Length: 399
Image (cartoon, rainbow, N blue to C red; front, side, top):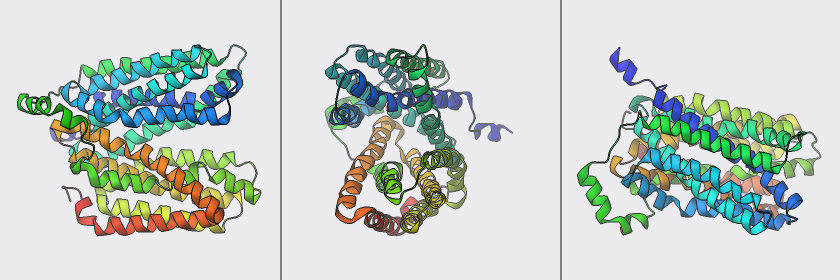
């Protein structure tokens, strides 16, 4: 009975962690459709300026992670997450200054908070996830994060156009989300008992320059590569599919995003558990296989139903692959360097999304949409081969 209690996922700490992450991601999801509208409608900026504003967030989010990860190891994983949430909420008030430069600065500072939110959250997950159920815990955790992208963009647009609404109201609500998340993190801190040993702390302190500028973490390099490779083709589904649908003459394409979003939300916790049962190597290979099948099938689809089937297949593969790579990173993270290593791992997603967007755009220009899907299918086929070759290294210690 005691052992079953130890192995339970739904502890108070895990629920508070998920709650804090949900609210932090809710703040981001609320601002996703609002910032482009604010820059163009309120500040008179062009779409190019919108791109720069959004790039400020991505750039600082990636650059700051090694430093934030080092700070999580030296100070507190929970403290870093709470500080990130507080920083997220406070930085958005710079948007009340009606200048594009202020909005760029606000989004750049918000990226720093985002780095703290993710680094601290992943490190805490690695600390509290039960050893025998890390795949399931990782799936639930990433599912909670992704849930905000279904609910809150629509809520933000409703709030903006309500009789009492405005851009200021949306900014204020987004800040409240982050601050309530920080409060949940504060409650969680009372239940997290983790301290780095004195010897490990001395080692970290003596090598702080080397630690901060040490970007390659060998313990989690393989799952980081797998996560990056899995998500290289993601922009073709999340961004470019709507353009492809327009070329095909498909209307009412919003249903595609609703179904794909719900699939991602439900599949991550359900399929994360699968990797605990069948093994990490087979789960990642399955993820690559489903994405490969989706990218090939979408080239012969010409209606909304077919596109939805392909999008669903893709998100099933992405869900099981992403959850499994997170579980492997959680298993392999060194407790003495957990913050730094999980910070490095978390860079894989924004890096893959940026590189994938560039590859996808170039492929469309060079070969059209059908050619683009074939090119990305080839990339996923190479990823599947790489996963199969490295299968022994991907298997969990429990296997």
